[in-house]
Length: 168
Image (cartoon, rainbow, N blue to C red; front, side, top):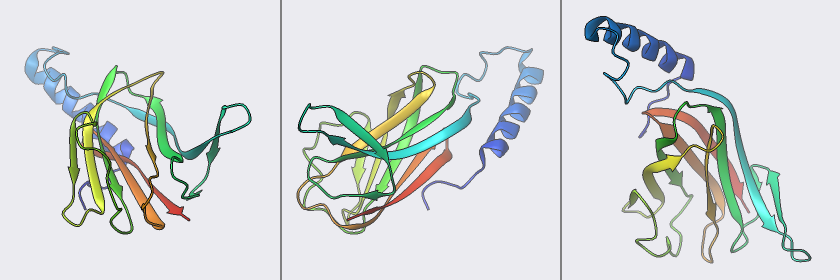
């Protein structure tokens, strides 16, 4: 497993203890450890979106069963209290088998790695926090496999959620 399974309450407790120890050793300087940011998760959501042909509007549905239609978008959103403008997010997408293609290389920002067996993508990048929410979406292409997919989302070394969904 790439990410440890840690509960957010344990992270907050560790952060509070680390903050207390840091303030004791640095003379209460809040800028001594800028990488330690507290966060609280309120809600996680997984959904897919469909463009309606009759008026080009976008319909979003929460579901863990997604139709495999080329161009169909699916993704996640996590809301909470992050207290920051940008977050270094690590996302791991695991497919049931290798797709025909992973798309054009170089379009991604940050670190984008594909496993040797081409079933797993690891994407780490700085993601903006908009209205205390982070999120991402993916799209189906011709040749993407059917089966069970998994997306793991990690922030500051902590798994925020693991989204399992079925693609048919």
